[in-house]
Image (cartoon, one colour):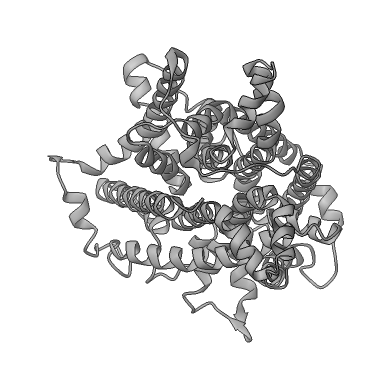
Length: 537
């Protein structure tokens, strides 16, 4: 636990505490009365109520739509499965500002639904909820489907042989085994929607505001740091309570599972019902995932003189407005370098933390399990400003160092590594480790021979998640990325923030490049995972 604790203390707790300290103690004296004053304001209460409501609604809707997809990807084998798995993960790494713009083009004024049926959703909360499902579909498919694909189906078949119906067998055998993974997925979806910013900023307008958007408004626009500090504390307390409840419920349901390679559980659909389920999942993916992505691709080629590569060519040169110090195309290489470094950091820190959490060494470790998720629930605006305030003097003067961006990105990647690896690590039967120890194996060799073969697939999935999250991280990166080294999301946001058809078209072109890079990376990960896991069991 030493290295993960030190990492979170320096790069998470210190920046956040510094922001709160400057907000509630501007002149050296604590002013706790501002907490009550802020929380008694009607506008703030409305923001808190809407934030909680839309997060719960988004989480429930995401589980409803994505759980059938998790089953299909875990149990069915069909042509193009690897490509489709990579495609459904792409939305998760897209900048939130861009996704909001894409949904506005679909359901807003003069959008696709407006032109076809005269239906506009940008004035309702449904646009926000659908955009959240678009974002978090992959979280449920990857987290729940990853474990589901390794559950031995013969356990459920044995229950049916003993007289249980299909529903009873699934409810009593498979569902209890999936509860930790479903709970982890629901937690991640809730945290991401609870701190939603870019989507609400564009689709919500002045009618709908979340806690994250209000923190940004109070900090960047109104320069009201005390109010922002109070809202950060509220967000921190709410997320901490949720994580504590999650850790308690998951701990009560831990059990040893019989895990098998996913190649042994996936098969072609059988019967009309399974084919209908597969068709329904493919249709939902097409409408919810592919259609918004298709709008982005189409607009990247649609120039004023017709379809062409004009916007892509413009990415390689500087414009006269001074928006960039380097050509926007250089953001691709910057994003890849930052993402690789952030992935390495997240895998090391998250892997050590997950291994420590399997020890079950008392309340300290259980509390650390909940603390690891806090970066997902704390405002990225707060973390970004905190980096600028705290990491600006020796011995940690990192403002001019390139490593600052991967460190911020790794903060978001570590929880994904832990939540992906932990259910599999805890599912390993402890008797296997004990048998290895009785036969003379050292703890390191027992982990290498027993745990690693079972957890390797989860480790690769975790690395893929960390890489994807790093590619699309925007909230903190926008404050700490150097002007001469922008990432793809930062470059897209800069282009969208400037008027003109050329800037908008270049933003669409950069977004399309980001989608392609992410899809190719995830597809390579799928191939690597399959090659390395086949034949090892």
